[in-house]
Image (cartoon, rainbow, N blue to C red; front, side):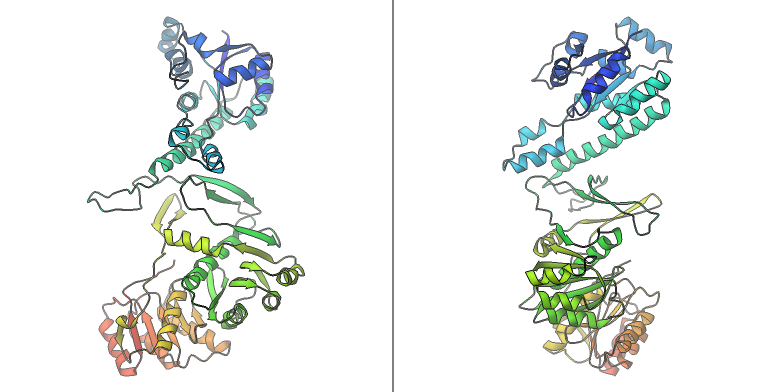
Length: 536
């Protein structure tokens, strides 16, 4: 029996060679529209699907291949006598190859946007119907049919035909997996487009950003050298966007070694903390230093240089090999100060020529120019945080809000003056970005002691005090922040014994009354925000 192939593709890369390869092996080709014209122009004998089915294309080409002679031929099970009987009864031929790739919905979105115009009606015409139906049917019946959606697979298929006279079941299964992966991404993109501007509702009518089924469609931007460790593979992915959505901010690498997975993790951690300080800067400059996703320094000052120096002084030992972010324009003096220690990545809004020249002498340092204002706007819009472990995906809204401590949150001890309140606010913002359990001590709008990732909150306080003193900082008169409530007064006692005179925390412990009493007895100013910021 003659072998049949349907070829209907948008991407015609290497199609001529593949189609001729099939024809030379006795495969008859059915095709549609532009694909049929292309193949005929290259000297191939092609029968149109309309001729084969006896039914013309209708609705301006919207209906071409949706016909029993097509889908019966694809879906028939060759080992089922009744399926074969029905094919013979209805004069349907088995179809052994289905070569289909889809209208480029995502790329069409990008092309329309580049042209500066957007028409819904023109975009929906790039939602393929016949193609997905055929290729899904072929993938479903891959025990008997070869489903082909990727031109890079053409040589592999021809090689198996030459070697074995047929395409192996193993390859057909792998091709089917590729089809369903492609369809998942394609449908996810279309779903996201139709969901733009819509607010999903819970049963009680309240708005929620969490859908019952969440689809994330990502495009690989680049393959990274490796992941957290050399034996792990990694890539950088980003979602595509539609017209009308906010411009996704990006960074530009000006110099340095190839950016790594760990660099990107720390870069995002640095950005997250930095933007907390960058938001609402009033004539000051912000600087942060991140190491292994934890802050090891942060400060506000009148100049970028002063801010950086103060941030690094918090813990210069941990700053070795860290990630630095500084607001404002980076000049030569600031660049030289940063290069006094070893840094992996520097994030900046802009650089002067002498700043660039200074970094050029250290060719391995990665210098990234970032759109801080764009990242801040994206942060305000909110995103979903996704984690995966052993097949469980945990999805939450990102922790993008923060309650700024004010005099209204005063719970115990003396009322804070303006200067002390500024330090409490500063410590609270930094603490939000420290791994739990977390304690931050601040003084003069700079971090001087950070206790991160401890199993006990009192140990986090002890570590913050010890780190401050180790690097020559005196906690006396400092302000501290705790990311979650104090279960007992011991954390407050530890900090106050070191000289800390004010603390901001969420409150909410069943021992709150004991903690308040302790603060009153010791004369420690305490503010309770009612808002926890765990970071696991």
